Amino acid sequence: MYPIQSPRHLTRRQLLQWSGLSGMGLLLGGCGATLFSDRLNQVVEPLNQTVEELLLRPDSPVPEFPISAIEPDKLLINTFDVTPQIDPTTFRLTLNGEVNYPMQLSMAELQTMPLTSMVIRHVCVEGWAAIVQWGGVRLRDLATLVQPKPGVRYVYFESADGYYESWDLASSLHPQTLMVYQKNGEPLSVDNGAPIRLASPIKLGYKQSKWVTRIFFTNHLLSQKGYWEDRGYEWFAGL
Ligand SMILES: Nc1nc2c(c(=O)[nH]1)N[C@H]1C(S)=C(S)[C@@H](COP(=O)(O)O)O[C@H]1N2
Ligand SMILES: [Mo]
Image 1: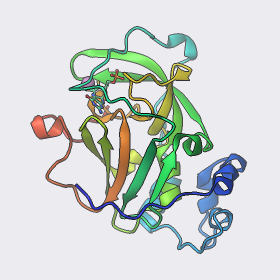
Image 2 (image 1 turned 30 degrees about the vertical axis):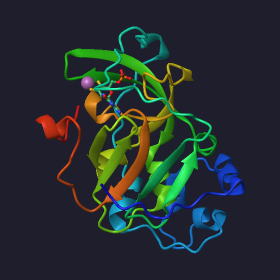
Image 3 (image 1 turned 90 degrees about the vertical axis):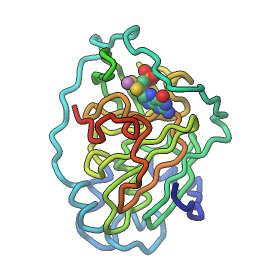
């Protein structure tokens, strides 16, 4: 769907430095040579205005539920075809497209980044819903890492089962849009999308891709917009 750019691996040292970072937003405070770029030991341009505005905008968070509200039995497995088996030790999440720093990240590297946990409602158009706890990495932190170029407006997610989705940039950078590897405090199961999947309280269930292998940033929506969207479902699918 999109040309794969030569990926770049983070060094172990660079990723360990994540543990010393509290909130990436703090590091985008308008100065060209940010603390973040210093930590990556690279000369980086300031983020383009659209992305920076979205990252700094005080998005109103969707109210979350207490842990006691979790409904462990209500999240039904909803998979359109085969369930891919992915070896988490060799798995790499590719981030590329219109970005300054395309990357391939291992699960170990992703788990070094700040962990966000949220208890939210998952809503499937097929008429069921479940309160779930998800734990993982904010997509906005991944965007900060790879630096989308000016003009980027959409984010595509490719999955190992052939599923694909596209999101608008603002929804992708919402602070509760996560790439998760935990469900209800446990490692994510294969049925639920291991090793890593999308989760967000602002979109319907079919937007929340399981088994994500590649995230790419683009200026344009392609003719293929999403597995269910291309079969008549609504594209924005906001909650
Ligand atoms: N890769 C992939 N992601 C997917 C799907 C799928 O079939 N393949 N189904 C979607 C739908 S319709 C829903 S409701 C949720 C279900 O997530 P769950 O199976 O973990 O409950 O995953 C979404 N993500
Ligand atoms: Mo769904």
